[in-house]
Image 1 (tube, rainbow, N blue to C red):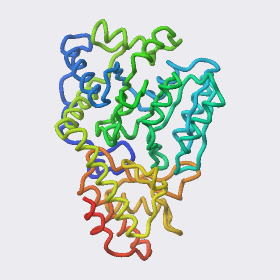
Image 2: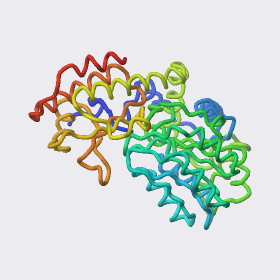
Image 3: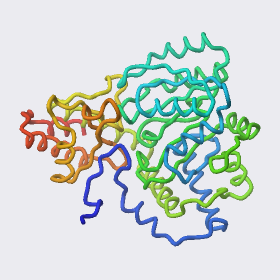
Image 4: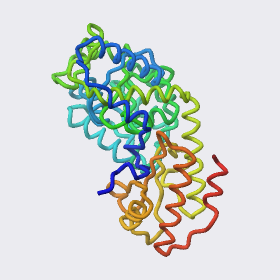
Length: 381
């Protein structure tokens, strides 16, 4: 059996992990109630604040990104709370459903998949409802390659209306602009295995002083995701209330080191260049992005299939013949789109190798693909 490390992982998460980050997990297991761990954890929290660009509290959950999403809901939303949420894909739909299942009342601003609703619709909802508790927004809708490009305006609106603003940034933090405090985001959550380029299993959350005060005064009837307990343990002990995934903490810490060695602004610019190259190269092959131009993601490239392309056969070719992993579509988009994760370590090498394999695979399936895609992509790099 061939090992997975032979593959170029161009999924929308998990992504390729640098060797330095993988090797960090070889550090010895330590007592998570020891001074050794407290030193490590304080360092991680400080670096994560820098990554989020926030002065707020940081909670580090040993969970998938979905755990962080759930934590944001069960700690903040109470029965009958009104929550505004734009819904334009699988993950925003799941989040709205979670809010409803927890007892909240989601006010869904729906738009076609691949698009974002006009900002004016949020203002209209606030005019119609005077008791909105929070706005939740999936900053980057992974299922459709769609990014909200007015997060700053949503933060300003929430600040003016004195409601909470929560950003699901699972697939975008570390790959695109996200100044948490500047955009007035009260709770921002992400996951380690996407643009941060660490192994799965660590999910950081930033919490503003306003949200922290509310959570502390309105403790939720939960255990593992009880953020009040995390605040207490960090403040009193510089520890986590439950056993953290120690090897993953070491890996996440090293991934943060790599981010700041490169420089966060440089990292964001690199992601944009690679995304532009993907869109240019794919377009030269006659392939079109699924997301509209003003909502197009720099970290998840969702692409419409050419008529007649068999999804499974195409992705199997990429995997088996070229050792490249990409993702298919979700739900109604299954078989209609494929998705490339352009995040984390992504570079000229990843872009050129992936585009070359896509072009070759389509030709192997007897599709007439124009030449020159690689050169057009390189012009953007």
